[in-house]
Image (cartoon, rainbow, N blue to C red; front, side):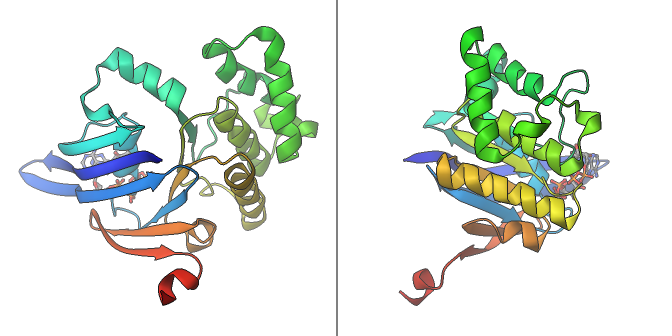
Length: 234
Ligand code: ADP
Ligand code: ADP
């Protein structure tokens, strides 16, 4: 099943007469259960591409289909709902609410979607156990390490069962040990919960955890690596 189809996507920026082709004719698909990385240097267009997919940015041309629905011509009210129901987000800067404990950060995501109050704690406890974050759930974000915050963000992203999890440079603010623990958590969501994940990063160690990597430069995809030598020998 195709979860994401990016079809001839273009995003151009005009600045004082000069044109930046941030995303330049990009097409690719992501199947259900895939763990795709998009790797490229700073300025290669990764964030612009991700922002178009998450619909916070409007493409100049081309189409993006999520579960067969074209999100490039949806109205704003439909888009808000689409983002809430179909997408999970993991950011570089964690973006947990400092006014809420880890548990309540996750609970908020469920409550907004209308989850029955009696079911919320059960769902949180289950994912917390899977990710090994039970001990930090009652802490506030400012009492957690960066790695702990990002693992709570993982729980928040998956608990609503989104079709697609988008992660933008998620290890950018983590030291290598925390990054490793976070990437283990993300890998677990993919392996155990069959989450479909699209992650963008400039970091080779981070990208190396993905099952498939697309390489971006100057707004274009110039290469692809599928992990595992078998697929190359065929
Ligand atoms: P990356 O995420 O790979 O670092 P970006 O998508 O942020 O790349 O940027 C791609 C290119 O588009 C860069 O040349 C950047 O300067 C340019 N760009 C990004 N956002 C804007 C904007 N809002 N206005 C003008 N140029 C932009
Ligand atoms: P990232 O490190 O995530 O790629 P950037 O530092 O490239 O982010 O960009 C940060 C923000 O500034 C983004 O919202 C991007 O769209 C915007 N931006 C990037 N380059 C430009 C530019 N040349 N002109 C205007 N806005 C830009």
